Amino acid sequence: MFDLIRKNISKHVKLNEEEFTFFVSLLRVKKIRKKQFLLEEGEVCQFECFVNSGCLRQFYLDDSGQEHIIQFAVTDWWISDQYSFLTGLPSPYFIDALENSEVILINKTSLEDLYQKVPKFERFFRIAFQSSYVALQKRILANISQTAEERYHNFVSTYPEIEQRVPQHQVASYLGIKPESLSRLKKQRPA
Amino acid sequence: MFDLIRKNISKHVKLNEEEFTFFVSLLRVKKIRKKQFLLEEGEVCQFECFVNSGCLRQFYLDDSGQEHIIQFAVTDWWISDQYSFLTGLPSPYFIDALENSEVILINKTSLEDLYQKVPKFERFFRIAFQSSYVALQKRILANISQTAEERYHNFVSTYPEIEQRVPQHQVASYLGIKPESLSRLKKQRPA
DNA sequence: CGCGACGTTGATTTGCCTCAACGATTGTGG
DNA sequence: CCACAATCGTTGAGGCAAATCAACGTCGCG
Image 1 (tube, each protein chain N blue to C red):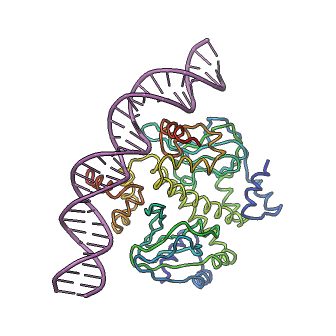
Image 2: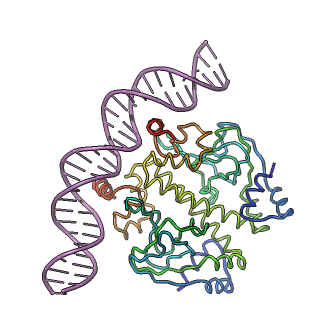
Image 3: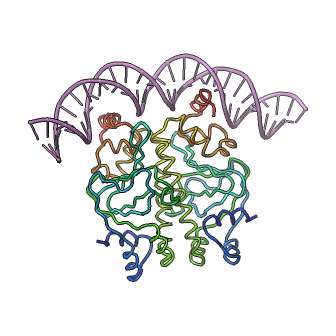
């Protein structure tokens, strides 16, 4: 049950049994079925979420009813709305499941407690956010410097497993283009 | 000299005199003149950098010789290449000064030392990266969901002080559009 | 002064969007 | 288990936002 998250954390910090046991005592496991929401716009996000299995997405719903996918999260990834989590303000985003999924949640007060008792977790999340920051910078560079086609091929080679399992129009949304356009550019130069 | 950085850090963690004194002992102050490089493509980035005064930018130079601005950093901001800093690999980016500037540097080994001796800094940078992550997500959303004009007005209202001090074509680069296009859309609907 | 950096404007092209229709597949309720 | 609806991807025609290419004016600085 907690093997995967243990391994995930051990990528950046080494925990002993006691520390890990304490960590686990703060966790809550949740199953989410396809299309169910983990977070809805207007709610305050109170958790960090680790994906044990399945696939989720975070998206923004604009005034014209269009969805814009901010991120995907498959097995072994973290997902949450850091904006709402940090500020305590209502989230502008939705998080829902693209497949039946199992997630592990830690809520904000537990996490603060954890930071106090096991400062290594401060380090873990520092490194995790630093790495995520790097990934987002790369995505921004792609957005401001590349064509839709280049971004798509970039995406496929960076995240082949996501390209495999999510519908094509969701990938289009993530790339900031229309489904029709993605369809067309794939025909011209298949992956 | 170190008042500003002290205030910046105190936004997230409280330091006593001893801790701050130790921190300062690890710092190096550097003046950078306009157009000088703080980091060049191919170098390994060994520092975190705090801008005490002036203005810097981080950019990518593509194969066709085009610059793409990843971020600006004015007084009281941090700038670095986290990718190279984290991985120890050569940076794909440049960092240079848009004005004569004064920066405060802490190098990687000193920072690791600092994390060991004063774990509060782990917390400080955790929160700093978490906040930056939020800002980058917002920029990505803008890039995938808004028109050039919307992104521009968004930028002006978010960073009025940057809009004031950097040349217009640099703002265009940051927004992912051409200088001519920015000029035109400003004429149609002035800020 | 003269040159380079910067912003503007015009003419044209193009990449992606919009709107619309249609087939294939999936899933679901009767 | 079939019928029907919903979801998803594709294709076509036409439109528009932004890019491209080119020229030019202004400013500030060496």
